Image (cartoon, rainbow, N blue to C red; front, top):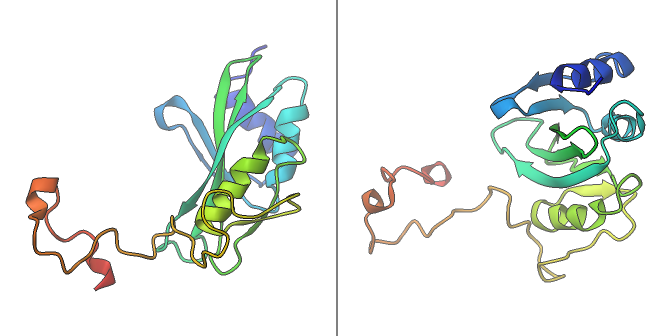
Length: 176
């Protein structure tokens, strides 16, 4: 039997009772939420399970939701089973003051550069990573540029009218 979203979710919940904190299917793609403590075991399971055969880590990306107290930072793993043409994603969240999660390089060597990028831009520390250092920004940069901690634009500018850019002029005001 070819797995679909329902059988994939059931297999993960059967193997890891209580580990799936939430799930949805936006645009038909199964999206699960779990914890950083469970993520590697779940990733290993979907990769090694003979029925699922999730053999490809398409990408992983960092996310920052500054208003989500205790879960400000996160990682989204986009996964694919070539055998079954099944795509899904798994999200994990953690506090910005403890930005650590285990590395997935033990399962997919391609996670190496992806994790380095998310460390570089979000400050996410992938414990156990073989070479976690900046990959695109200068080594001595002391900020993480994709965190939503900085204005997108200079708030003192008077030479443009936000209405012409599809904005009502109130975006970015939370920093005032």
